[in-house]
Length: 184
Image 1 (cartoon, rainbow, N blue to C red):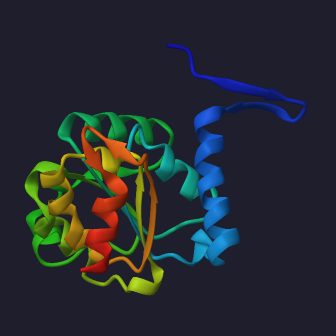
Image 2: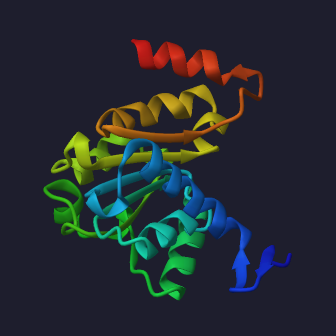
């Protein structure tokens, strides 16, 4: 399918990129958080990597950890590398990097949601809540409750949480679910 674009006097823009930039504009305007001040981003459900690219364009230079299903991680790695952004599957990193310490201070790490949060937590060992963002644009509340439970330890390491969601999905009342989880 063709990429949906918007035509403006300034040029042609991809609609998805405009959506991504609008999310971060809201973060800056409502909470006063500039993405350049962040050190870590944890993204649940990375799509094709658009959020990674948008954040890099906005000046984010920290570690970006994408949690997704293995086929999507391959697509993200391809697209990000094609776009000039180095991205690494955590399963392919040397065991020293995945077990003892994270891969440098920056970079894009693609982690399988099927392996659980413990291996991913290693890459957040040096994260501070004040400069760590958890992002879930629709994906978190579209996941089944079991998958959500696996991600909570990662979400709890981040002091800034940015979710977009519908009120219900697949029979789950997301508003009730989030209120319950956030109050416990």
